[in-house]
Amino acid sequence: MRSGTLLALAATAGPVLADQHYFFAGAFSGSTIFGFEFDDVASTLTLANNITTNASSGSKWIALDAAKKNLYVASSGYFQSYAITDDLGLTYSSNVSLTSDCNNGNFISVLTTEPYTVFGTPYGGGCPTLAISVDESGILQSTFANASYSSAGGVHGTSLSPDMRFLYSADDMGDAVWVHSYDNETGTIEEIQYLAAADDMDPRHLAAHPNGKWVYVVYEAGNSVAVYSRSACTGKLTFTNTTYSLLPSGKRHPSNPLNYRDRTWADLGWTIGFTNSSSYWADEVLFSVPSNNSSAASPKYLLAATRSRTVGVPGYVSAFALDADTGAITEQLFLTPTTNSGGSANAVSPAAFAEDYFAITDSGSNFVEVWKIEGADATAVAHVDLATGPANVVWYS
Ligand SMILES: *[C@@H]1O[C@H](CO)[C@@H](O)[C@H](O)[C@H]1NC(C)=O
Ligand SMILES: *[C@@H]1O[C@H](CO)[C@@H](O)[C@H](O)[C@H]1NC(C)=O
Ligand SMILES: *[C@@H]1O[C@H](CO)[C@@H](O)[C@H](O)[C@H]1NC(C)=O
Ligand SMILES: *[C@@H]1O[C@H](CO)[C@@H](O)[C@H](O)[C@H]1NC(C)=O
Ligand SMILES: *[C@@H]1O[C@H](CO)[C@@H](O)[C@H](O)[C@H]1NC(C)=O
Ligand SMILES: *[C@@H]1O[C@H](CO)[C@@H](O)[C@H](O)[C@H]1NC(C)=O
Ligand SMILES: *[C@@H]1O[C@H](CO)[C@@H](O)[C@H](O)[C@H]1NC(C)=O
Ligand SMILES: *[C@@H]1O[C@H](CO)[C@@H](O)[C@H](O)[C@H]1NC(C)=O
Ligand SMILES: *[C@@H]1O[C@H](CO)[C@@H](O)[C@H](O)[C@H]1NC(C)=O
Image (cartoon, rainbow, N blue to C red):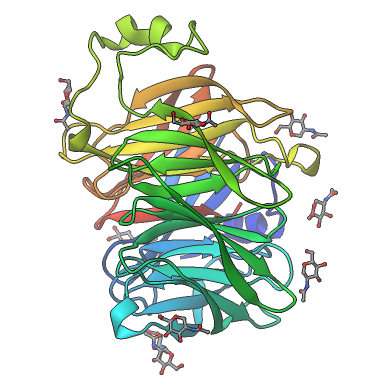
């Protein structure tokens, strides 16, 4: 089943533009994790591997370690650790089992420097984020500390500061953002800030800019991206009162009178702003991945997406241009309908090999797509249907 191409690809894996790239996609149910090959010259996407895992009730979130030797899986009852084999399969290594009151394993962030701690978050019930140690091979060992929230909390996503000293948590059920410090010498975690969001915004995921100056937060119910500035010194955040809609809003952004809304409304047939925000739920916000170290602190794009609650009615994907020096949003480049609702997913995943590519998962209609950004728009360039609903994607190469 494995092709020679894949073995060659594994040997040359790295952030370079090549023909063949590989990614894993988890699924909301079943025990399969999918392996995909994407050819950026032919724009072909191939389901290369159906990998049977021990996550029998789905892999709601998957994450790679910095060395790309392990894949971590959030599942019901467990955070699991798999070794990535030479032929890009997965071999079960270990699990950290969850308590019955906090068993909905749902999100994972990974420290990319020593001691390579893994932060796993079970969703709902005020459950804390668990700081999990790894051994010298990156295999999950045990929980040694928690980032705690209030009992009304339900943290859906986390992000680490570039210096790896602060953990940011998007509290969807508690309508807030939390900041915790993490001391990698003592292994202690302390709450340092709680920021209530405006009523019914529901922060879902967030992304700390690699230059340390910003945390961008996607508001699930608000269907928007909110801009928080960050003190590199204290790690604390300040909400700037700026949000960008992830739905056709019928509004012109005051700081940018010539932005996409003026230019493309007619093209897309939008004449009014959507007033049915509750028919949508925004899901993801992530930076594109710079392809070399000299640009590592200045990703070109911030990508975000929202899902429609009705299969057959599209969600939206958006990209924001970021200032190369400050990391501030300069322009919302596009707000483009996705090919279907997204289901519970519409998770965007920026490619590891070039900033203009990203993957999208749709669990309402069961497919994975690769999209390409060209100028001020993006289009799906490849599509593969699946037997089950994919959750998120991680690019291996
Ligand atoms: C993966 O499984 C699907 C059925 O769900 C099948 O059509 C496909 O051929 C399989 N692919 C590989 C590479 O095993
Ligand atoms: C994981 O799955 C493999 C293959 O299905 C099985 O042999 C192994 O016992 C399982 N391990 C655990 C810890 O469940
Ligand atoms: C989790 O790990 C324990 C041992 O630590 C093992 O007995 C159990 O089978 C594992 N379960 C899964 C689903 O991997
Ligand atoms: C803590 O992080 C710093 C900076 O990344 C690193 O130099 C140090 O080795 C880490 N400490 C431990 C105990 O891993
Ligand atoms: C972390 O939180 C879990 C769930 O509340 C709890 O069972 C565990 O004892 C805590 N662990 C530590 C090290 O604080
Ligand atoms: C945001 O708005 C609030 C309420 O109007 C105000 O108190 C606060 O200073 C503003 N924050 C910033 C960063 O402008
Ligand atoms: C929301 O409203 C817009 C404009 O009327 C409509 O085109 C769209 O289909 C609606 N979305 C859903 C999910 O019902
Ligand atoms: C580094 O990457 C950036 C953006 O991805 C690109 O513009 C730049 O030319 C690259 N520099 C080198 C030295 O490859
Ligand atoms: C890029 O950065 C990584 C991690 O900081 C480092 O290991 C690597 O050597 C750097 N590569 C180059 C070409 O400088």
